[in-house]
Length: 469
Image 1 (cartoon, rainbow, N blue to C red):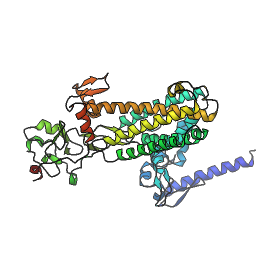
Image 2 (tube, one colour):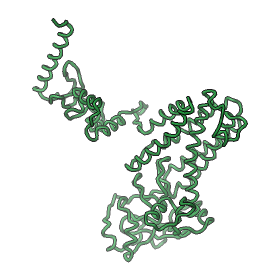
Image 3 (cartoon, rainbow, N blue to C red):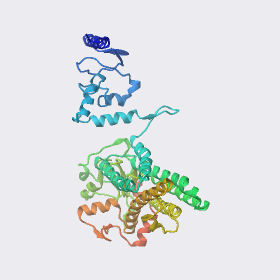
Image 4 (cartoon, rainbow, N blue to C red):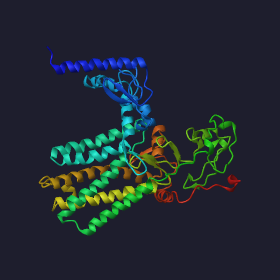
């Protein structure tokens, strides 16, 4: 005879199946609480393994976006995926390595991102999921890398590869992400924290040196804040007008007060160092030029050297590139601040690396100490400092390459966008081993090119009196 607890469990299972059958006969639950197999679930319809009604979740718990994405997260409609009664099927798919329904992982990730909120005075604040990985992974990986030389070699080698892979992944999907901005800012803060906690207490760093490093960090953050502002977005036509592109050749283009909207034309140009500072005037006799400068996304005529950013979805004056490290475009209005932020970063990072190496590797030059430091792993504090120095050196090398390319482009008065277009159309010359592409269109010599760059954003585009009238 079977034990009493086995009979009781079998009785409860039979009773639960009867309740489910009775519930399916009665139809969907109008709201509130519902009972399924001896368990209570909040009311929202969802399909169980046998069909019929299933849990019902109120809107204040899920939210509008959560209602749409609940199916992919495990709380929505659909047989075999979603409801608590079908959770065993989902678990079985994972355990048996079977493929999930198309788009299931994306819906699960979106739903988790929608649920990730922090309580605040004015209500729960949603957190961007891309901000979280650097805050969690960077300290963990650096502490693990400090345990042994081989662990440090593996982690510091694979970390740039993973970051580059994620960059190409988001770039191919045309997605904006705060991952790189979060990684950069948190890296600065964490390196400064390690410097104050592990390096300064050793007594080999003077107070004035700490002040100088702190001032460099503050200046870099100020320049970065300025670089994140408006890069020079072209205003969108009022009223969201979307005139047809095909009608451009058949209409005469006359000046307007805005100087760039619609097919009515663009304002006149004022030549500055060979570049149209304002907006180029097009005429009916130049349909090809109009078609070339017409942006079908923003529905406006772009001025010279302006471009459309597919990530920001806006046209930018003198567009250079979209920088993932500031999560914004680099254009006419913020290019100077971008170069200034890179310069302050390079100076501050090199200075911090030098101070740290002089502290943990006494009697050696910074370059030799970076390659060989016998006492680096004698204690965990020195190992962590040395690991952070190598991490800073890798990041500084990457930023130094970006700064070098930018300085060369400024010297030849060419933007990254123009260089890519010249390579695509085979209209540019490779100089200095391919580091810079000279288009020859706006190059007026080193001094004139730098003078033009330093005058960017100093005055708004000019329009003639004829266009204003």
